[in-house]
Image (cartoon, rainbow, N blue to C red):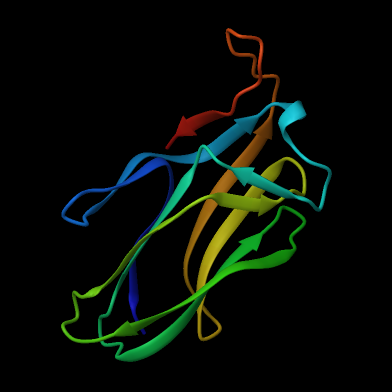
Length: 149
């Protein structure tokens, strides 16, 4: 099975000219104004956030299929992304991904989890606490607020 060496939510994920991936301002909490969220059960795109996933081959060889699973506060499971990667030697080879945009199925304020799943095994899990508050910018429009780890 491949290894997950990083799985984080951040404000910005940079892919440099040498294809090195950097996560900037890793967060575990996001606050949205009540006017920014859809009705329960609809998709909420978290356009101000990116997700970074770095996989290493380890002893895995050949094609593997991965899924991104969202667990809402109820908890209810939702699958979004599915992708495959072919792992070859050496063990430090792998795949670095910036997942954008991050989106959730809105289930209200609370703790959401994103999981990377392969062959019915959870390889990694990262939380995102969504809070609701009035967030007025200077222009009088609501904007998302984030709290770093």
